[in-house]
Image (tube, rainbow, N blue to C red):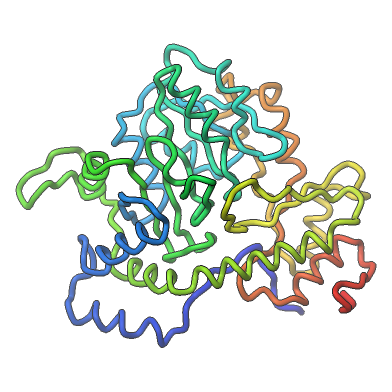
Length: 378
């Protein structure tokens, strides 16, 4: 049996590069609580991403839960049903009601044209997602937020390193949240971060992620334990040494997929996002009705060939039991998101993906017929 091919595999630096970092942790015996690697990693991320204020977390979900707390968000928050469940779960954990709005058919991000109709006196914020690392229409979303006095919290879990014409996509909104989970472009095994616009916001977030402690005997907020440990921070510093190479590999794999799939009827891939720097976090296809079999049949056929594609994002968040009773979760309110969830398939893309694995994936999609790809028969 062929080795399984997954949608993503984390890039890990050579083990010998990690050893000096481990030796430093063992020598100074500081495993957490803002140790030296934590401080180094925080500054290194600010420098790499081009932002001023970052708070590191043990995972992206806690980062989002804490950011909502820090901004004192209450009431209703407009968000997308087309995301990972952590987006909306973070609202529920804060006692906030999600209000789902449909997505744009081209970007698959929250559709700005649908936001205003969903705003009520109970609305306090907008929680968009840069889906697959593709930037939202940040200018239009901010314009709406300004008119109605709403906060904007960006779930940027997929958007590490993404830039628009003005710089990092993470600078938009009141805060942005990153994830460093093992499935992401940049990983610390688990991990996450909140990007703040100013020192005051960062300070409040840093209090909240450490039980609310201001010093050894002073607690100023009802915080939680969201701190990133020293091992995660050390791995992050190592990853920064290799991330640009990893992004170049992803870009090349993306190019190969686009060339190989261009002439298959019923298979549609997303256009490249209009931004100055992309991260190629996912390679997404839509299985349209013209394709001879359904999306789920293709998904099964790939799995039978040990290719573990993923249906990101299916089902919609709005279809899960804790959300489907919400008026905004009704399928008639979300036609684009519903159709996209039924057609989407994410194909394997990660540094180190063997060219033959990519070609095998394309061959299965073609229905077993071989094609000539760069002079190599797939």
